[in-house]
Image (cartoon, rainbow over all chains, first blue to last red; front, top):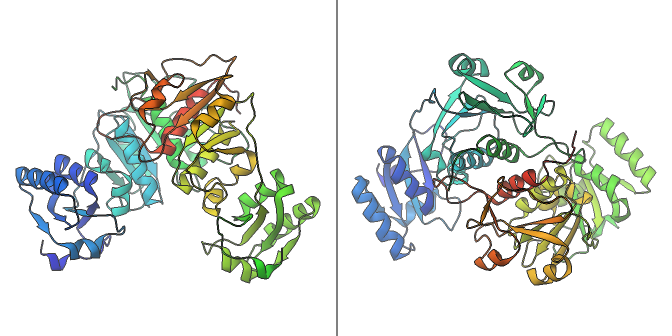
Amino acid sequence: MVSSDIKKYNKKYDYSYCMGAFPTFELIHCRSGAADSVYIHSKTSESIRDKITAECQRAGIPVVLNDRVIEKVRDKESCLLLGIFYKYEMSLDHGRNHVVLVNPSDSGNLGTIMRTCVGFGIKDLAVIEPAVDMFSPKTVRASMGAIFHMNVQYFKNFSEYQELFGEERICYPFMLKGEERLGDFSHPQEKAFSLIFGNEAAGLDDDYLEVGRSVRIAHSEDIDSLNLSLATGIGIYEFTKSVDFP
Amino acid sequence: MVSSDIKKYNKKYDYSYCMGAFPTFELIHCRSGAADSVYIHSKTSESIRDKITAECQRAGIPVVLNDRVIEKVRDKESCLLLGIFYKYEMSLDHGRNHVVLVNPSDSGNLGTIMRTCVGFGIKDLAVIEPAVDMFSPKTVRASMGAIFHMNVQYFKNFSEYQELFGEERICYPFMLKGEERLGDFSHPQEKAFSLIFGNEAAGLDDDYLEVGRSVRIAHSEDIDSLNLSLATGIGIYEFTKSVDFP
């Protein structure tokens, strides 16, 4: 890509950015095929510059020293490294566990949830539209590059997801009215699961009580509800407890 | 307080604000003694205006209709209600479970953690300095008013906390190097616990391995660490599982 063509991010572009060293290394390691180029600012420390240059050379990714492009695109002054990548399509894996987000409306939340998913070994995320843009630099940054470890697929509505994946697995919608308390039951290991979470403000509507086995995270009446990324994190933690992490 | 004296928040003032209906109701219900006044914007719906006016009257809190003050102070245009309160001092309860945050640096995280604490019935939060201001409007908003349900006490350093509360309870520092895996052991119910979490960027340093029983939240090597508010939420969830919430 020609430096003069690079502009502040817009959802309609077919490319996006990851900002900062950690996410850029994840891009190079996990999605080098999508990477267009890596921009380095003159204030980058020599050790990071050498390391990223070596890794880009190995992966065949052009490295450009150019302060102006980074300063034009970044949203935090501390960002000294920019990875440019083309957006790509992904499909969820049938055999694996999924997280399903219905109408997520906050880019930061979406990224944080990706980071938690990858942290607990869940690599497949379904997003039900309308929803925020998974490739926005804000989401990529909040994910700390976890997005490059995942399959993320968008669906027009929940029925579309359910038709493709519903039969083979157990769906667990998380709702304030959920019938079973998280932690009080166990998921049969021979089946895959999908953990379903609603929008930040509205949660899941009552129709989801008919989908699979509804779950509630019991909490005191002193709060209205848990924050979405917290609820998702607690749900994923409980469902992946038997996995043998370090 | 005279309207013309009300300025944008500054940490050095002896008063602060809560913005929006939900946190303002929490202020009136839980900390009416600290409340100075409630400001209502002319765009507030009639039903909320009536409800808040009735509750303020019952609690003896003056209600002021004044758009200019709200527009000067708020940081989101959607805010139509402002509660003004004087800062107050709190002390932790000796018999109860605590969360301890060492050097939290993000106001939003601090508020989100308060909300999660209250959600799982933990009403005592220790904050080890240096740390962000618990009364900043950003923290109050992220807490969704949960701050008004809690005791929060600041300590100059961890030793000061430990001398006052260490003997009577079991301390669990959460660390990447923690010796026991969360979920693999259980806390003896007859003792109180303190769950200790480090700073967003640095975590807890190795000295904390000597404090009580260190805990790790096992996760995959594909991420560096979990987000602080996520780790705190998961820890609190696991430790309060036996509590009989609805």
